[in-house]
Image (cartoon, rainbow, N blue to C red):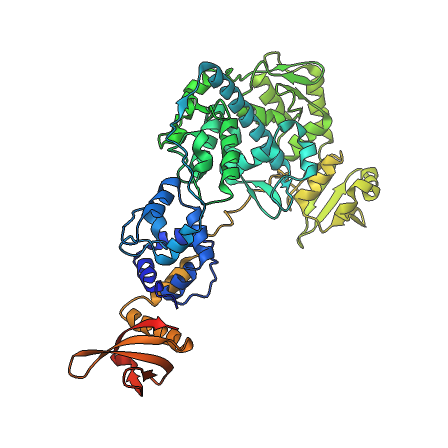
Length: 556
């Protein structure tokens, strides 16, 4: 047993539950680890691999403090010292041994963030606008259907081909996750409950939320340093320089940084990246075109916005049109797009009323006719959930049922004829969308036959990281903390000495109240007694464990 485990066990016992949880997460300790008490924890945390994981999280300032501290020097590095320092703030010897094997700490200089020029600020504003727009496109695509991911977490090649116009998709995916607008679930990227509100927000609110959550997700140490120094912030983490470069790229895409290479600068609106004050997008907005709330509807069934359309209007318009992200201000109405809006619960009157409110040119007759005719056909195919969890499909048009029954594109649904209907074990909403995508006039109805909206978005549940994952472990460690801790530690030391056949210096409390030290070759432990050969008297002694005050291992 390590002679340094006891000081660490005392430090762990004195820490709060919140401090212990942070330390356990940083050390990548499994929540189901079989530790019984703080002594078990201390021994495990003093393993070199565990110490290296803790050192990798230290900032440049903290690493220098540990590197420069002498054996008797005390160090204050906050909660990062839990597991690395004893209760008095001295570096634990096993930690010092690992530190001495670490690479030298580079001198990153004392560079501070410099303000960006007007030209660089204008370019940063354009990047921020494009990035937020691309992020919205990604989330809208994920709302239609979760995006497939490969084992590494990157978007699949299929999704990248489908979203080819969105630039660096993996960077946008990372921003979506850092901003907690999307989450990985079973190799899918799904929206979170925050995403719907974000999609309807203005550009200013969209950017502010993403920038704020991006800053909050940054590792410690970054806020105080210029971007050129980011790769040196965590000097004992071999993976950090690559990660720092990636985070710097994301900040650049969000317009929080300008310039590049060794001349990184900060626009006025990016200053809070290096502090705690809230982000203010007013200077950023002043460099961008204003959002509009009106469109031109044309006889060719297209719609043109004379500028960036307000997101809440853009989202509603997209729900009833085909939209090419490469032509952000252009929309086209089709039978299929109007059918999708109807499946999602919209009505012909609702669509036309919305278009009248935002159109500068009224609603052209061809568009009004398209919406009316599509609504008339909508409902010819009715999709209803069955009591057993399956789905039945009915239609007043027998030819439509026959077409669906033999349609090769619908084979994955497993539609089977039962009298005047088709049945499948697939859920009703999925069936309604599959039929709509295959251009059948399908509508979803409830048990009483009333039309209901078919929700297509699959929202990610709560974060898979359980905030209470370590509760049981910490409670177990605490349960062995108290007056009996000294006795438990003594038992451990004696057991370790016997296993190692070690020579130990034992302090024994005598019946008269005095204390005596004996040097023994530990031979056995049982029945509450320690057996060993007294080297000085060359005799076998048996000592009651309850009389032993302390034990110190001298050699193996």
